[in-house]
Length: 147
Image 1 (cartoon, rainbow, N blue to C red):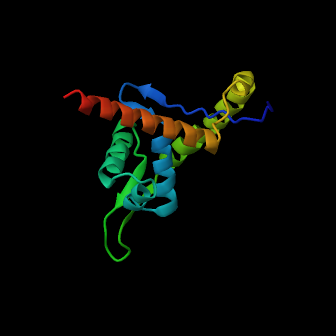
Image 2: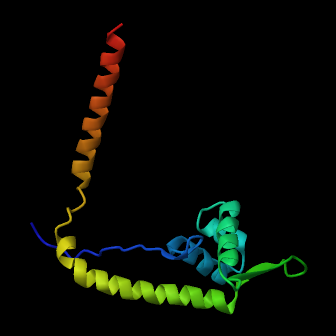
Image 3: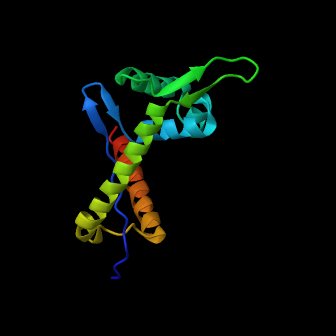
């Protein structure tokens, strides 16, 4: 058995108060808005509904004393959404803290990560799927043969 280097993924959320939190999903949404300049474009990129993205953004804007984004209505340029200075600070602070957490996790969890099971091979996955399918067929057959 060979030991390979494993990367431990740590995902976290920061709760500032009961209804005020920031986590990877909201940060990704803000970063996509920064890149695309559009809430609908960011929602599409992240494969989430516009309504859900709007709810996340509304939550952020109402959770802090300062707005996180500013939306401009249509017109010649078509409107758009931009991060405020506070929104930029929120994203950068979260990402910097995330790097610190990842470094700490790599150091503290490396011995546990080495004990993590390797992902099964394709051959093993096909075998497991075949066994599951056979078991499922046998279960259906036994249910129908009772009557």
